[in-house]
Image (tube, rainbow, N blue to C red; front, side, top):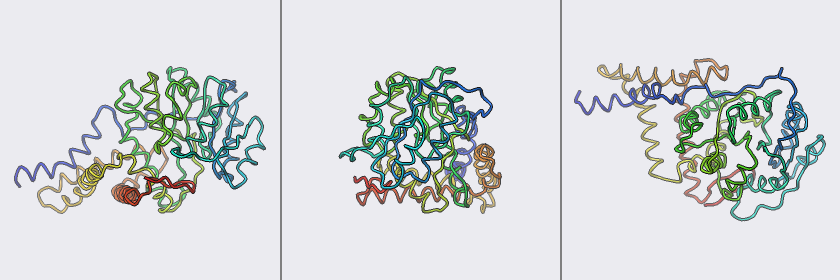
Length: 369
């Protein structure tokens, strides 16, 4: 084999072994906060929970019930974003919950951000918890999150939710979703003072209200579809410290179950993640082909099969911590290449939607290009 061929054959092994060795360890699950159900009750009167909700009658009750057991004095505001179901009625049935009727969506706003903007005017506490309507906090989670925020002197902390896994497609794709998010936004870099990476998980964000105001939220990012990372960047650029981690105590109630539902979740923002760049889409496609496809091609080579095997072993080793964290069988690592190809296809689907004039589609709303 020529030197050029050897270099090409070595690329996937170099990529995957290099991923395991980089000091920021994007594959690890060391950044985490778990609920402590045996923690002593704490006073949470310094926190207001802000929940944007649109047609969430099937989950809003569980979300609010999870908040009721977090501690005393917690104030909750639900912004009913033009729901056509019983979301507002169910929310109003809980104690210490105020329901605001959201106004029609103005031009140039994303629905969730418009709801948060309306709710922000009713927050009068030093700390705000931004919580999605389909996120349930396990007992003791909010006190643990608050303690971490205060102990680490952070003004913005967020936790990535544990996504429900009830089907083959859920188990194949949802842990991989978190895995790829960590590769794209290494938590240890995002949590450092470096402004190269700023990331957050929008389902659960505990933030100083003053930091929100100084960062210009939510009007300054009114049209952002990846609003959580955009908000984290603005908070970080305003001079505040952010932190992002994993948690099994932040539970997503959103049922996926099918490949189609996961596709819709990914395709609504995947091309946005690439800045609507066709060039970046082609680069990602080539990288996925090298990282996930080329190792299998090399296995058939009598000369370079060892390089293919090294790449595959390193690839699967990088995925094992995520599987362990979510208590899944390690054999799912064997299907990581299949999941990668499906995610690449969803990204292309997102791009095709954009080229057809649809920037995103979510909650019966279509955001055009």
